[in-house]
Image (tube, rainbow, N blue to C red; front, side):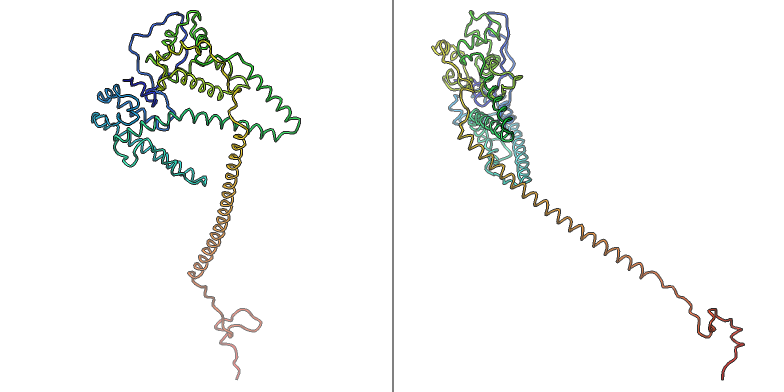
Length: 434
């Protein structure tokens, strides 16, 4: 039998408050006796995080499901046995789960349409397989009701995704470091010889400054925990007690150290190496170092691999030789993140991406020029059509106006050399010729 919170941690369904070192003045601390409020959920980093937490929140409200959760071990959950209990939850909970699934399906459909539109605007082909992976945590063939298959998919997807989450974080960090080095080398190419030499000297100087820091204690060792006990908790190092230390830093009081609570214990060590106000210290590297420390302690202390450290596991670890006499801890600068070969491949990949981008840009420019040419032709045709219409209107107007009738005098009415016509009486006095 195992605790529900273990299941929630595996799936990040029951996350804990951020675990910060607690400053106290007492040398002995008793576990709180009052019932604690449930800890607030934190983002798991999964793209379906909200859906995941809402589903579990409602399933927990069903007494039958909650009882089964108490009595089901982790392997049975992974095998889908717990999902089958969905058939026995209350009608109210099932109705709410149906609603949550419909909302999630609509969200994913909207998200996929936006991605397709964006790819289309950029001239990129749509990766349909990648888009379909967005639906792996539910049965999208039935978008209306939440069934046993949906819960089974949700559990398996969350378990698998969270197990790979740290690996993906490491890969993201490696790409970040290679991109940073690539940019530095490209910037050097733009400098003249003297400026390049000064920049290289400055780079080596800040590397040396970063490496010049106090000794880093082995994560999870007695020296490291005693330092937290003394500097963060304000207690006498000679009074160090593992059980009291555990209770102090089990911030949600559930009897376990989760990943966030463990990572908080390394803050004092990380502050020896990283300062956000220093040019030579990169805060992205600090978070990678924190992740390495947490993974190391989990591998050493979490004996049942449930991604939690129980009090018993913690006490057992403090009795080992490695706790009292640990090896030294090598920081990031002592462990190269990538090789020159990996950097070369990364740069080649960037070059290919840049080349593809330039080709697409050229294609878009040609398309724009062609559209502008076609627009000019349309404008010219429009102008010709407008002129033709105006000409037709003028002709139409001329045809509708009546012609002006001018009276033309006869020849007998006009004397030679006289442009004025004669009156009727003068015409009668003129002699006639025989």
